[in-house]
Every structure is written in structure tokens, then in C-alpha cells.
Image (cartoon, rainbow, N blue to C red; front, side, top):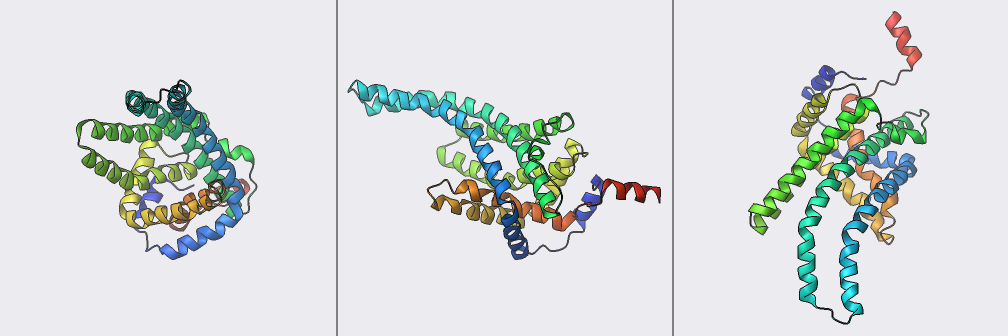
Length: 271
């Protein structure tokens, strides 16, 4: 496992990374891990379902009530939806915190499985839940808190700025911090001994140096991952895990992995 100083040094001395090579390597890797990616996406989608039901069911019930009484009034429905909007915003903040906590742990577990498959190591389904452990909970909370902070900032923009300006700023924040947020999970997945502050420092350091490349990989990976929408949308569960693989390939290229066994390390320490 790389130390903080080693990782920082490798970032400072990082050579040019080839976009095409990283993408093609990720596509080849996807062929090996698509089943595990399907499991990940199914679980993440399952987490979202209760939130969507909780938010949208009251709206649906309001409209259906008016339809049954033959008194459907678009203005009244609009007013009802407007009244719900404020409540939904605060509910969404809580969901962002919980969902980021859970998804970060699961995606980090997925990265752990990907690394094992990539190096032909034995893995288990329980690896998905590896990061739901005491020594990583504080890191998960910190990453979730960062996402909540961004969500609060977007809410402030909506409250105090004109619609177009707020949308523009929200879009800018989403674009800029999408790279850093993805790196948080990546560094956590392969460096569980790092402090929370170290993970943030390394993520911002690497993200700032390679932002254009990493953002391009996110966009292209996302587009390729969404190709499954052609199959009535359900296909996205099979393909969207491709979104995460270019970052794994980037990490592997820049930092590498310590693939020695425990016996090998003991022998090396004795020497």
C-alpha cells in the first residue's frame, strides 16, 4: 500500500496519460467485471427507489384524487406541487447525505473487487461491504458531508439568485467537483490507512493537475455507460458501471498496486 508521501510524489512526477489508452484498457476490463458492475448498479438503484416513492407518491395521489372527483384543476395541482417543493428540497438534503455515505462504501467495494479480478485474485461478494467497517466510517461520513455541503450551496443559489444564474452556478459546481468527488472514493478504496485529510489533499492535488483528462474520462465513460438505455432503460444496469472504470485505470497507471502476498511481505521485511 502506498504511503501519503509516495502518492503525493507520484502525482508531482506524473507523466502524460494517454486518453485513448486508458479508455481502451477500461473497455477491456469491463468485459471481465460487468457482472459485478450489474450487482453494484442494482443495489444503488434499489437504494434510490424508497426516496423516489416517498417524494413522488404524494404528488401522484394528489393528482389522482382530483381525477376521481372529476375536479382536476391544473392550477390547484400546480399550487400543491409548489407547496411540496420546499419540503422536497430539505428531504433531498437528507437523502444526499445518506445516499453518498452508502454509495461511496459500495463503489469503493466495487473498486476493491475490480482490482482483485484485474490481478486474478480471489474475491467474494462480501467485498462489496468491506468499507462498512469501523475504521472507514469516519472517512465515509466526511465524503458524505462534502456532498451535503455542495447540495446546500446549490440550495443557497436557488434561494438568493435569479433562475438562470443559479442554474449556471449549479452546473459549474457539478462539473468542477465531479472529478474530485470521484477521486475521494478511489483513494479511499485503495488506501484505507490514509487520514481523511490525506484523501482530500491527494484528490484535489491529482484532480487539479489532471482535471481536463479526468473530466473527459467521466463524460465519455458516462456516455458509454448510458448506452444501455437503448434496451428500454433496463440495460443501463448492465453498462453503467463502465462509468467508474477509467478512474480505476488511471489510478493503476499512476500509482500501481502492491500485489505481493502476506508471505512475500514478511519475507521482504526479514531481509
